[in-house]
Amino acid sequence: MIAIVDYGVGNLFSLKSSLGVIGAEVEVTGDAEVLRNSEKIILPGVGAFEDAIEKLRKTGLDKVILEEAANGKPLLGICLGMQMLFEKSYEYGEHLGLGLIEGSVKSITPVVGDALKVPHIGWNGLIFSKEKSVLYRYVEEDECVYFVHSFAAMDCDSAVTATTEYGAMLTASVEKGNVYGTQFHPEKSGEVGLKILRAFCEL
Image (cartoon, rainbow, N blue to C red; front, side):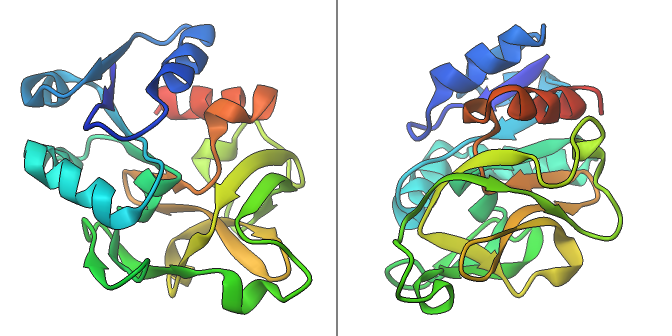
């Protein structure tokens, strides 16, 4: 069973529906024991970093996520959920993340150029790192996924598994051991997104 963390932030319905399409057994939960008993965990998120990480910590589920990740359980962070995997974010201040992946989250505005709009919204192609991530076993390079973000993970080259070009090369996904993250929304990325979710389910 795959547990989707419910801490008051995130588009849980579309994620659960997408996982259902590929036949995964899914439970949306804010229960620590359900997370502990799950086979895999997905941490979604939308909105502002500070608000999301505070809500997660108030539930106490941050500790459970850290414990389960340390035990080797596959963990996937999506969009803001991916950003929270990092050490810190500079979104409207400086805020500590979960620290599962080295690096920080910063505004893309200084790097994308004046000609491009921020937030980055829409479909963009994936450019794989040298060693193809297991999440992309069913996906070819340059296939497109759906992004909505104004901030991105930086200073994390060793963990990057794919980038996307939007005025600059932006981090699209990361991986460190059993911890995975996608800046894009696989649940909003059509057939390509379903293939990525399927690969995660098969870990």
